[in-house]
Each structure stands twice: as structure tokens, then as C-alpha cells.
Amino acid sequence: MRAQQVPEGQRVEFAAYMLRNDAQHWWQGILQLLGREAIDISWEKFSVEFYKKYFPECFRTAKELELLQLKQGNMTVSEYIRKFEELCRFSNICQGAPAAYEKWKCIKFEGGLREELLAHVGPMEIQNFVELVNKS
Image (tube, rainbow, N blue to C red; front, side, top):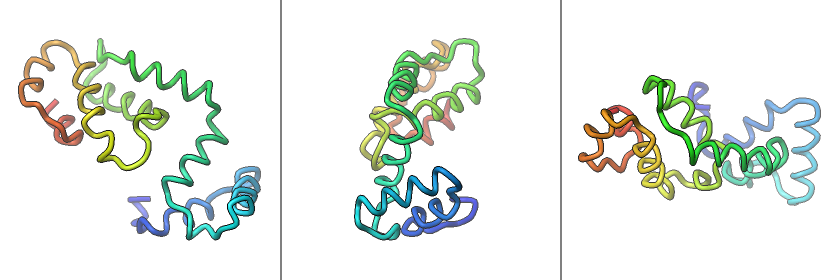
């Protein structure tokens, strides 16, 4: 969406336009159930409904547990970031407005870093995820 420079208020409409086959029929059903136009539905609501449909609860629970246990280990920082972000997409904690879970995300990410990296970034007490990633 960022690459296409889709404004926040048009993300649902853009995503709905990109849906095909079963996903398109599913979305039409959601709109009928909610009795709304796509433009009236927030991106957060769309994401929640989409994840409920296409990523069953047992899958999301497994991904959430994987996130909670994630450690950098032998991964490079880039690999760790990629895995961390992938798992965050499925986490109940990381849903909604980013400001609501930013601090938790920093604590969790930092806690999974290898000791030698944690020794450098931990004392900085960074509470902005992008800044923490850059410092790491």
C-alpha cells in the first residue's frame, strides 16, 4: 500500500479491489453482513475480519506462541527482524493502532536479541521500534 501510495482512507477499497475468487465473495458477504460500503470500514476492521477468515485461530495461536518464544540465536539481525515482524502480524498483542503496542514490541524484540547485542542496546531504553531496529 505504501509503494502504491494508497491513502489511509482508501486502503480497504484498494484491498477489496485486489481480492479475487473466494476472497472476493467472502468480502461481499462481509459487506452485506455489516450493511456498509467498503469506504466506511476501517483498515483495522478489514484486517481483523480478513485474518479471522484466512488464518484460523489455531494457526494464529501457534504463531503467537512462536513469537513469544522467539530468540535471535544464530540468525543475523536482519533475519531476526524479518521473522519477528512476520510473527507480529499474527499476534493479538500487535493488532490495532501501533502506538498501543510499540513499547511491548520493543521489550519483546530486545529480550530476544543475543547477549552481546542486548548489552549495547538495552541500556539505551529505546521505546521506538524503528529506532531499536536501527540501533541493533
